[in-house]
Image (cartoon, rainbow, N blue to C red):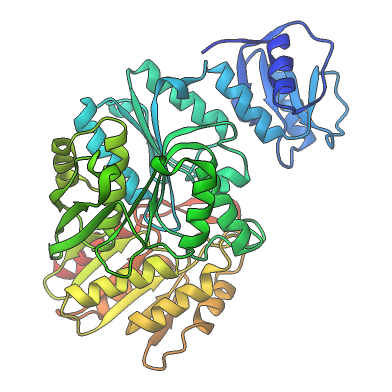
Length: 509
């Protein structure tokens, strides 16, 4: 950690074309914050979003010495103020400077996609743990890891952290001797400029399907796709799924951003697939995992040297593609095939495809699947790999975001389930019953039995109690989340896995 002088701040903002006006101030700042709760003496505070004047008064009392503010900021203050035309961008470039550009001391892999980001991130992380002797950091939807010691493992609150938090964690990783970092990069990270000015050694684009379209996210699918593809513009090399929807748009954008020998295409072994560099095919699969074969096609792919058979200790054939993308990425930053074999054998994603077997109430799956593509894939997987008399799903949708998901969730239920319990899932400021109405309206299959129970714990309990020995119950979307977002408050919640374990224990007692 370091200090930033007033001159440094002015020069950095001017170099980036962000500066509107600069204060008459010659001191230095020894702490950065964007939240009044995180203020220390001699803090530079970033005024982003709707910043209440009361918070600023509180922050000044705690030690704010100067601020970075937008031109629209009208609160009367004597604080030295850098006025900028883009506060999130300014926060990113000043944060990386304050923490001495830690990204330049890490081999960075960034992963985006509508589904599979977290799984691919953990796969790459486990492979690199082996390859680097545990010198790899992680930033995911579930957690942030900046060192091997558990005290450096943190719960995540955003898929991609705010830039100030991200560079602080990167600096901590460097201080802890980390040499690599794998991170999920959401479309919101680019829209909200959380990764402004950051470049990745390798960027992975897994897939794209409609999601995150709504008043508080992306106004249109085109806007969502555009922000997803920004990863191409900020990566030295790109790994792209040749089987993805919208492939022609993706490859066109990728080839404008990176030379062709820096683009690595992967796809399932299929004569109809666009020409890929690396192909994969299932050798065998069951409920515990799968074995898949990797084949390299052409001179460029042969440089990788990753052809062969691999065992993945995770169910679901859709995870094989995630594994191949992670394999190519880790190879490009130094991993060998021994590390790939070992990493894929041990990888576990908390809350993903966790399976609980019972004596009299069938099999229970807990998974973070939360949109049409992921729920449809999960239900199809269960149908394909289990003998199912009755398939039940417990599912809801969050409030005030991802509004476009709701009809898709209903469609996936309509196509793949026999019974549904529509329930709450982070309703925030919306009425969970109104959200349930939108999901239910898209369930057009008359054979699906629809139940509504807005208390998620009760819904899970009722679904498991009603299941027979040959039934499957899928608990979708919340995984190991230990809270429900209700009315702006993180309300404690047992988590789906814990509820299921407790209910089964009580039933079998």
